[in-house]
Image (tube, rainbow, N blue to C red; front, side):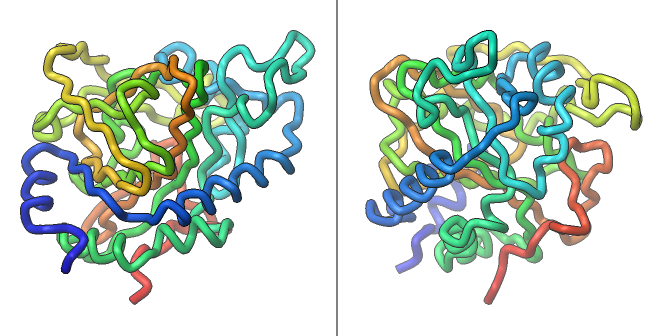
Length: 292
Protein backbone atom coordinates (compact mmCIF):
# COMPACT_ATOMS: atom_id res chain seq x y z
CA UNK A 1 0.00 0.00 0.00
CA UNK A 2 1.32 3.44 -0.94
CA UNK A 3 2.27 5.73 1.94
CA UNK A 4 0.69 8.66 0.08
CA UNK A 5 -2.75 8.12 -1.47
CA UNK A 6 -4.32 9.83 -4.48
CA UNK A 7 -6.61 11.65 -2.04
CA UNK A 8 -3.52 13.01 -0.23
CA UNK A 9 -2.14 14.27 -3.54
CA UNK A 10 -5.42 16.02 -4.34
CA UNK A 11 -5.53 17.66 -0.91
CA UNK A 12 -1.96 18.90 -1.33
CA UNK A 13 -2.74 20.36 -4.75
CA UNK A 14 -5.95 21.99 -3.53
CA UNK A 15 -4.86 23.33 -0.14
CA UNK A 16 -1.10 23.75 -0.57
CA UNK A 17 -0.30 21.34 2.27
CA UNK A 18 -1.15 17.88 3.55
CA UNK A 19 -0.49 16.06 6.85
CA UNK A 20 0.53 12.39 6.64
CA UNK A 21 0.94 10.08 9.62
CA UNK A 22 3.59 7.41 10.08
CA UNK A 23 6.55 8.51 7.98
CA UNK A 24 8.98 7.58 10.76
CA UNK A 25 8.72 5.12 13.64
CA UNK A 26 8.97 6.42 17.21
CA UNK A 27 12.42 4.81 17.43
CA UNK A 28 13.62 6.64 14.30
CA UNK A 29 12.36 9.92 15.77
CA UNK A 30 14.19 9.28 19.02
CA UNK A 31 17.42 8.43 17.18
CA UNK A 32 17.31 11.74 15.30
CA UNK A 33 16.64 13.62 18.55
CA UNK A 34 19.48 11.84 20.34
CA UNK A 35 21.93 12.59 17.55
CA UNK A 36 20.96 16.26 17.72
CA UNK A 37 21.39 16.26 21.50
CA UNK A 38 24.92 14.93 20.95
CA UNK A 39 25.66 17.61 18.33
CA UNK A 40 24.46 20.33 20.71
CA UNK A 41 26.46 18.91 23.60
CA UNK A 42 29.61 19.03 21.49
CA UNK A 43 29.03 22.48 19.95
CA UNK A 44 31.50 25.29 20.46
CA UNK A 45 30.01 28.57 19.36
CA UNK A 46 32.27 31.60 18.86
CA UNK A 47 31.18 34.68 20.73
CA UNK A 48 30.39 36.65 17.55
CA UNK A 49 28.28 33.77 16.25
CA UNK A 50 25.74 33.85 19.03
CA UNK A 51 23.09 35.01 16.61
CA UNK A 52 19.46 35.32 17.70
CA UNK A 53 16.97 34.05 15.11
CA UNK A 54 13.60 35.74 14.57
CA UNK A 55 11.06 36.11 11.77
CA UNK A 56 10.15 39.70 12.58
CA UNK A 57 11.11 41.93 9.65
CA UNK A 58 13.59 44.29 11.30
CA UNK A 59 15.22 41.60 13.38
CA UNK A 60 15.60 39.37 10.33
CA UNK A 61 17.58 42.07 8.61
CA UNK A 62 19.73 42.77 11.65
CA UNK A 63 20.43 39.27 12.91
CA UNK A 64 20.23 37.04 9.85
CA UNK A 65 21.17 39.23 6.93
CA UNK A 66 23.86 41.21 8.72
CA UNK A 67 25.53 38.09 10.02
CA UNK A 68 28.01 36.40 7.70
CA UNK A 69 27.48 33.38 9.93
CA UNK A 70 23.93 33.04 8.58
CA UNK A 71 24.51 33.96 4.96
CA UNK A 72 27.29 31.37 4.61
CA UNK A 73 25.49 28.57 6.47
CA UNK A 74 23.96 26.82 3.46
CA UNK A 75 26.75 24.27 3.16
CA UNK A 76 27.48 23.97 6.89
CA UNK A 77 25.93 22.91 10.18
CA UNK A 78 25.45 26.00 12.33
CA UNK A 79 23.62 27.07 15.46
CA UNK A 80 20.92 29.74 15.84
CA UNK A 81 19.60 30.75 19.24
CA UNK A 82 16.41 31.90 20.90
CA UNK A 83 16.14 35.37 22.40
CA UNK A 84 17.29 35.96 25.95
CA UNK A 85 19.50 32.90 26.37
CA UNK A 86 22.78 34.84 26.84
CA UNK A 87 23.82 37.38 29.42
CA UNK A 88 25.59 40.65 28.55
CA UNK A 89 28.89 38.78 28.35
CA UNK A 90 27.56 36.23 25.88
CA UNK A 91 27.41 33.38 28.37
CA UNK A 92 24.44 31.02 28.56
CA UNK A 93 21.81 31.81 31.17
CA UNK A 94 19.81 28.68 30.28
CA UNK A 95 21.01 25.09 29.70
CA UNK A 96 22.47 25.02 26.20
CA UNK A 97 20.11 22.19 25.19
CA UNK A 98 17.28 24.71 25.77
CA UNK A 99 18.99 27.67 24.11
CA UNK A 100 18.61 26.87 20.43
CA UNK A 101 15.98 27.91 17.93
CA UNK A 102 17.41 25.74 15.15
CA UNK A 103 20.45 23.99 13.71
CA UNK A 104 20.96 24.28 9.94
CA UNK A 105 21.35 24.25 7.00
CA UNK A 106 23.17 21.16 5.68
CA UNK A 107 22.26 18.33 8.05
CA UNK A 108 21.07 16.40 4.99
CA UNK A 109 24.59 16.41 3.54
CA UNK A 110 26.87 15.81 6.53
CA UNK A 111 24.89 13.89 9.16
CA UNK A 112 24.31 10.22 8.18
CA UNK A 113 21.08 9.73 10.14
CA UNK A 114 19.51 12.87 8.67
CA UNK A 115 20.80 12.02 5.20
CA UNK A 116 19.19 8.57 5.44
CA UNK A 117 15.80 10.04 6.38
CA UNK A 118 16.00 12.72 3.68
CA UNK A 119 16.60 10.13 0.97
CA UNK A 120 14.30 7.47 2.43
CA UNK A 121 12.25 5.38 -0.02
CA UNK A 122 8.97 6.73 1.43
CA UNK A 123 10.05 10.31 0.80
CA UNK A 124 11.33 9.57 -2.69
CA UNK A 125 8.06 7.80 -3.54
CA UNK A 126 5.99 10.71 -2.16
CA UNK A 127 7.88 13.28 -4.18
CA UNK A 128 7.63 11.15 -7.33
CA UNK A 129 3.89 10.82 -6.79
CA UNK A 130 3.66 14.62 -6.81
CA UNK A 131 5.31 14.61 -10.24
CA UNK A 132 8.76 15.98 -9.47
CA UNK A 133 11.20 14.78 -12.10
CA UNK A 134 14.60 16.02 -10.94
CA UNK A 135 14.27 17.32 -7.36
CA UNK A 136 17.28 18.66 -5.48
CA UNK A 137 17.67 19.36 -1.76
CA UNK A 138 18.06 23.05 -0.93
CA UNK A 139 18.51 23.11 2.85
CA UNK A 140 17.67 21.27 6.05
CA UNK A 141 17.07 22.26 9.66
CA UNK A 142 16.37 20.84 13.09
CA UNK A 143 13.85 23.15 14.78
CA UNK A 144 13.54 22.93 18.57
CA UNK A 145 10.52 25.08 19.52
CA UNK A 146 11.74 25.06 23.10
CA UNK A 147 9.28 24.63 26.00
CA UNK A 148 8.24 28.00 27.38
CA UNK A 149 10.66 29.82 25.08
CA UNK A 150 10.02 28.60 21.52
CA UNK A 151 9.53 31.76 19.50
CA UNK A 152 6.56 32.61 17.29
CA UNK A 153 6.99 32.19 13.53
CA UNK A 154 4.89 34.90 11.89
CA UNK A 155 2.81 34.27 8.74
CA UNK A 156 5.06 33.76 5.72
CA UNK A 157 5.60 31.91 2.46
CA UNK A 158 8.77 29.87 1.98
CA UNK A 159 9.12 31.20 -1.57
CA UNK A 160 9.80 34.63 -0.06
CA UNK A 161 13.18 33.22 0.95
CA UNK A 162 13.57 30.42 -1.63
CA UNK A 163 12.52 32.08 -4.89
CA UNK A 164 12.40 30.35 -8.25
CA UNK A 165 11.35 31.19 -11.78
CA UNK A 166 8.74 29.99 -12.40
CA UNK A 167 7.20 29.85 -8.94
CA UNK A 168 5.67 26.62 -7.66
CA UNK A 169 8.89 24.59 -7.74
CA UNK A 170 9.73 24.46 -4.01
CA UNK A 171 8.24 22.15 -1.38
CA UNK A 172 8.97 21.80 2.33
CA UNK A 173 8.86 18.48 4.18
CA UNK A 174 8.27 19.05 7.90
CA UNK A 175 8.76 15.92 10.00
CA UNK A 176 7.45 15.89 13.58
CA UNK A 177 9.89 14.14 15.92
CA UNK A 178 7.44 14.77 18.77
CA UNK A 179 3.68 15.38 18.77
CA UNK A 180 3.03 18.87 17.39
CA UNK A 181 -0.11 20.28 19.00
CA UNK A 182 -1.87 23.60 19.46
CA UNK A 183 -0.33 23.73 22.93
CA UNK A 184 3.32 23.46 21.85
CA UNK A 185 3.20 25.49 18.65
CA UNK A 186 2.12 23.35 15.69
CA UNK A 187 1.66 24.80 12.21
CA UNK A 188 -1.36 26.75 10.96
CA UNK A 189 -2.18 27.26 7.27
CA UNK A 190 -4.43 29.33 5.02
CA UNK A 191 -5.71 26.60 2.67
CA UNK A 192 -5.50 27.55 -1.00
CA UNK A 193 -3.24 30.55 -0.39
CA UNK A 194 -0.55 28.98 -2.60
CA UNK A 195 -2.56 30.10 -5.64
CA UNK A 196 -2.08 33.83 -5.06
CA UNK A 197 1.65 34.27 -5.74
CA UNK A 198 4.00 36.05 -3.35
CA UNK A 199 4.10 39.69 -2.34
CA UNK A 200 7.68 40.10 -1.17
CA UNK A 201 11.12 38.55 -1.35
CA UNK A 202 14.22 38.48 0.80
CA UNK A 203 17.19 39.15 -1.49
CA UNK A 204 20.94 39.56 -1.18
CA UNK A 205 22.12 43.15 -1.37
CA UNK A 206 25.09 44.13 -3.59
CA UNK A 207 28.36 42.62 -2.45
CA UNK A 208 30.15 44.72 0.16
CA UNK A 209 26.99 46.47 1.37
CA UNK A 210 25.17 46.06 4.68
CA UNK A 211 22.79 44.67 5.63
CA UNK A 212 23.60 41.61 3.51
CA UNK A 213 19.91 41.00 2.74
CA UNK A 214 16.83 43.14 2.39
CA UNK A 215 13.14 42.68 1.65
CA UNK A 216 11.54 43.91 -1.54
CA UNK A 217 7.79 44.13 -2.02
CA UNK A 218 5.00 44.54 0.49
CA UNK A 219 4.46 42.53 3.64
CA UNK A 220 0.93 41.17 3.59
CA UNK A 221 -1.59 41.27 6.41
CA UNK A 222 -3.57 38.06 6.79
CA UNK A 223 -7.01 37.41 8.26
CA UNK A 224 -6.44 35.32 11.40
CA UNK A 225 -9.80 33.62 10.92
CA UNK A 226 -8.61 32.01 7.68
CA UNK A 227 -5.87 29.99 9.38
CA UNK A 228 -6.54 26.29 9.94
CA UNK A 229 -4.66 24.34 12.61
CA UNK A 230 -2.52 21.36 11.48
CA UNK A 231 -1.48 19.16 14.41
CA UNK A 232 0.88 16.27 13.59
CA UNK A 233 1.59 13.07 15.47
CA UNK A 234 5.15 12.02 16.26
CA UNK A 235 6.63 10.51 13.11
CA UNK A 236 4.21 12.30 10.80
CA UNK A 237 5.13 14.68 8.00
CA UNK A 238 3.59 17.85 6.56
CA UNK A 239 4.18 18.58 2.87
CA UNK A 240 4.22 22.35 2.38
CA UNK A 241 3.90 24.15 -0.96
CA UNK A 242 6.44 26.97 -1.20
CA UNK A 243 3.71 29.57 -1.68
CA UNK A 244 1.19 28.52 0.98
CA UNK A 245 0.88 30.96 3.90
CA UNK A 246 1.65 29.35 7.25
CA UNK A 247 2.68 30.27 10.77
CA UNK A 248 3.22 28.83 14.24
CA UNK A 249 2.55 30.34 17.64
CA UNK A 250 5.00 30.74 20.49
CA UNK A 251 5.43 27.59 22.56
CA UNK A 252 4.24 28.53 26.03
CA UNK A 253 3.79 24.90 27.13
CA UNK A 254 6.22 22.71 29.02
CA UNK A 255 6.62 20.39 26.00
CA UNK A 256 9.20 20.88 23.26
CA UNK A 257 8.20 20.49 19.59
CA UNK A 258 11.24 19.05 17.82
CA UNK A 259 11.10 18.91 14.04
CA UNK A 260 13.39 17.90 11.20
CA UNK A 261 12.53 19.84 8.05
CA UNK A 262 14.03 20.27 4.62
CA UNK A 263 13.16 21.85 1.27
CA UNK A 264 13.35 20.39 -2.20
CA UNK A 265 13.13 22.09 -5.60
CA UNK A 266 12.13 20.70 -8.96
CA UNK A 267 15.29 21.62 -10.87
CA UNK A 268 14.07 20.69 -14.35
CA UNK A 269 13.28 23.86 -16.33
CA UNK A 270 13.69 25.95 -13.16
CA UNK A 271 15.89 28.97 -12.47
CA UNK A 272 17.13 29.32 -8.90
CA UNK A 273 17.40 33.03 -8.18
CA UNK A 274 20.97 34.28 -7.72
CA UNK A 275 19.45 36.88 -5.37
CA UNK A 276 18.37 34.27 -2.81
CA UNK A 277 20.28 34.26 0.47
CA UNK A 278 20.90 30.52 0.01
CA UNK A 279 23.27 29.59 -2.83
CA UNK A 280 24.87 26.30 -3.87
CA UNK A 281 28.65 26.18 -3.42
CA UNK A 282 31.53 24.24 -4.90
CA UNK A 283 31.72 22.32 -1.63
CA UNK A 284 28.00 21.52 -1.68
CA UNK A 285 26.01 21.84 -4.91
CA UNK A 286 22.32 21.15 -4.31
CA UNK A 287 22.28 17.31 -4.08
CA UNK A 288 19.84 15.12 -5.99
CA UNK A 289 17.00 13.72 -3.90
CA UNK A 290 16.47 10.57 -5.91
CA UNK A 291 18.95 7.77 -5.34
CA UNK A 292 17.03 5.00 -7.04
